[in-house]
Image (tube, rainbow, N blue to C red):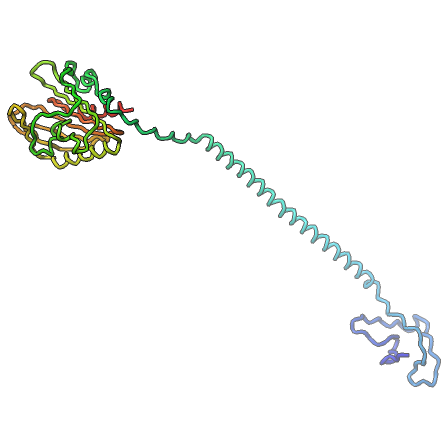
Length: 329
């Protein structure tokens, strides 16, 4: 048998005071019958040397009996409240993303719709570039010449004609030019300028248009030539433009076959709508006021070379060159 470390205390049975327990007040004398007495033995400690029932634990007062259930209720209610709050927060958290997702979905749908509408209303893509103009056969070069009616419209006249004996299928041989490199600036279709040594054409048409009777106040020359290909035509054109630039401001003399001489001042030179042009004037102050304009351009394997002379020259040679070029299709 185990002997407790302390004997019974006054009015209290047990194994010693527990500091965590509330002390139970001792009842007043006379309230209860005296407790039973253990029989006196020879044991000095007052305890029998055999097992005996353990003393009943002290009873808690009534408030303690209610405190524990009440605490449990409070804890349960608090937990329930916390669960309710958390549930409310969870609902609010889950609701916000749903609303955001809904708004985002609407915005996305609106953006997609706007994009689709924009795409549907966008202008169609630009059409492909037209094919390059065809290569003109040398035998078809005459078909590119402007008619006298068209030239009268360009010149603002009604009486210009193209004499049959002044339409040629060869370059012109008017005489000798000084300096020779400026002959092409003075006159279109000049023989030395259009010779094979200068990468000349494989086909040429030259036509003079003017009044049928003298004195003449308008003189027009149109020259259309064809080359082996567009590169050959461009090379010839570039050389003529370079010659014109080198002759700008120079006076050129033409000695005709009959021994007479004509003089002209070249320039200034300029460019308009891919057409190079220059002015040719008489350097003699006593001469009449006739002025000539030269123009040259190229398209495909064709080179167009024109000259218009009159007292009221503005852009006539340029206009003729443009219209001839437009006929290459």
